[in-house]
Image (cartoon, rainbow, N blue to C red; front, side, top):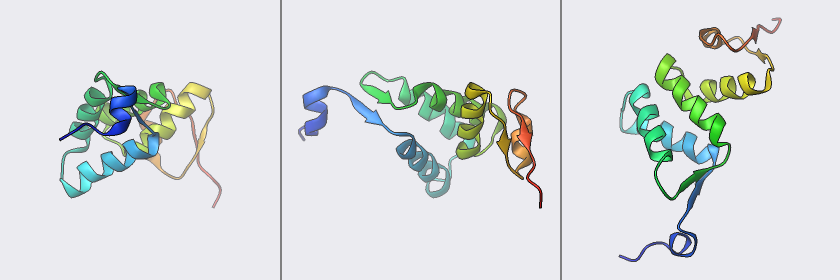
Length: 109
């Protein structure tokens, strides 16, 4: 089987954050893999030759947070972005309190 044209032309596969999130969700829900295992496997995949990601630092940090704290990728990604920018997160979700470098503000009800 011939390699897809985009790999032949560029030798690089670029993954967007949403594709990584969909892959994470599929591995966790459909294939019933442990969340921490999924994060570790995807971190390894992103470090493979020929793989590039948009927002590489945020995604790597988010996957590390998933591995370390066992939180959902979306929460880990928001925490990574908040930590990098110094911004607080407005959320009812107390999972954000697991991250010492992120400030959570609870919205008023």
